[in-house]
Length: 271
Ligand code: PXL
Image 1 (spheres, helix red, strand yellow):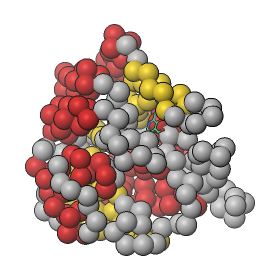
Image 2 (cartoon, helix red, strand yellow; image 1 turned 180 degrees about the horizontal axis):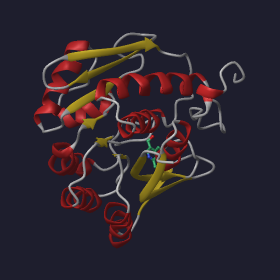
Image 3 (cartoon, protein in one colour; image 1 turned 90 degrees about the horizontal axis):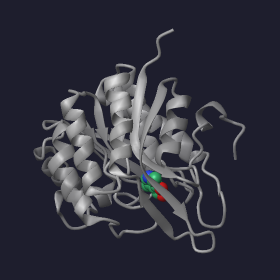
Image 4 (cartoon, protein in one colour; image 1 turned 180 degrees about the vertical axis):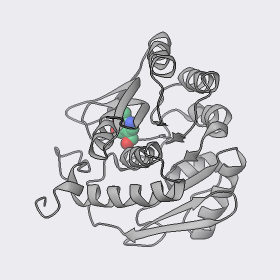
């Protein structure tokens, strides 16, 4: 049996809701084969949930990349948390060398709850090395404002402006995602291909258990790409998947509540 192959180049979220754990769960749910290149390990202080970020040594990232790029191949891939400028440069260089296509860049800058960029130098490196080769880049409002170097994005017009600026950096498609800021109670996403502003909207499920939603969305879109869907179709199906996963979100402890990746097949039996 042939099954579409996907790759996630991302960090490990020990708590299991985001990062490479979210990506693999999503790939599995959507019927594609998942592979990983681990770039960073994130642990949390049990009493405060402060995040501890440990980048993986460059030579280890390189060995993993060669395993997949030269030894296996893939139908679509995504990046998540990359950990350092050196890792971003390495990933970009290797993808170019191997002539890889169908690349989704999820420009992870922060974990939920903070609006402070962990490593601002990574934003510049993503703009310089990764965005130009991307088929799709999937920032949230905050990440879009950082990539486009605008102020806070609060309106549809500002979303459009930021999408146009990010597209000019070389990404073929830009998907800016929001939940409740542009319009209370609405999850409004904007897909831009350099010509058409294509709005994807849904009611925002009322919950704060959304940890890993960004990772899960970009992984679901990557799964669609790997199956041969167009960008527009993959975005539509990805949004349907994340809407259900958020509806199934649950508290893991007093600090964090992840989305439920299995929610789409447990409808009626969760919450
Ligand atoms: O949700 C952003 C994110 C991405 N990747 C990893 C993370 C987090 C947040 O915790 O740990 C590895």
